[in-house]
Amino acid sequence: MKLKRWHIILIVFLILGIIFRFTSTPAPAHPYYTSSPPKPLVIAHQGGDWLWPGNTMFAFQNAVDLGVDVLEMDLHITKDNVLVLIHDETIDRTTNGSGEVELMTLEEIKTYDAGYDWSRDEGATFPFRGQGITISTLEEVFTAFPDKHMTIEIKKSNTSMIDPFCEMIREYDMGDKIVVASFYDDKMKEFRETCPEVATSSAKNETTVFVLLSKVFLTGFYSPQFYSLQVPEESSGITVMTESFIRLAHERNLAVEPWTINDEETMQKFIKWGVDGIMTDRPDIMLEILGR
Image 1 (cartoon, rainbow, N blue to C red):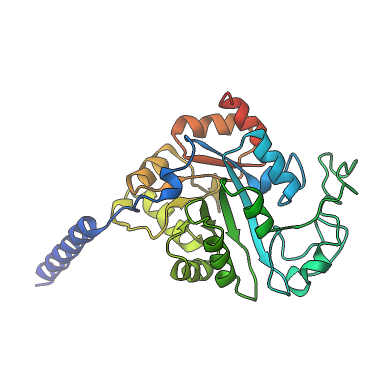
Image 2 (tube, rainbow, N blue to C red):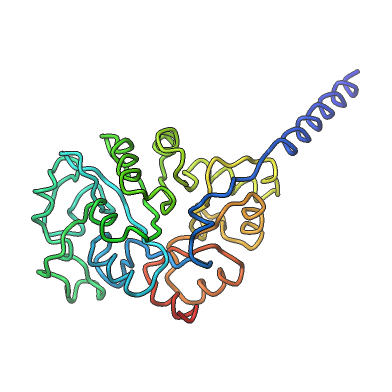
């Protein structure tokens, strides 16, 4: 009797598995990827943070002049609801000031030197101090580079920036030129509900699920609600970036864009494996590898 019960349970699971397998769907095509430059995309992390002060107009302009395909940046919101580009929740690490971004007005933030603490030699020299480099706004970037592809990461904030972010994307007609990223699943859910036409990458929990499924070759059962996997080479002792991971992601029509890859050897390996883009502080190295 017990054996018969187990047979029934196994049959039910088998039927459910077949249903899930044949009802799951890959990610649909999105204009961001169908209209993007030839792959692999050179994605300048913070505009190329090893080359110049990241998340600044100075960095973005130099990255564009260098010939990168995509500008990557981090989004915060000020006390007066202006969208600004900075990695941290405070200005302490990257400027000559201190304080939380959310508790400062744009006018206050703009008084600080965003090149003050940038150094390539562990603090021996600070070549960009006093050069007039300030924290950038998203509007400045949209205005300066209306035809450039961008990856924009929504950072942690108490005030939701989703509505003004979506409004600005639509106002500047950037919907087909942007991939929105975030580690926070709740922020990503809110953004997708507000701005469904814009491509997104996987949030933290979504990435974890896909990576674990890839290890047991069950990604064919997964219907992604995103368009790309922006992932580290490894995480928590688990190797994420493998040839099979890329192949399984492509079977789900997902782009694979690892971060933050700064050495030539790893870049060449991932390019050989067929990644769709590489996020790097050293876009100069990747461009040289690609002969561009």
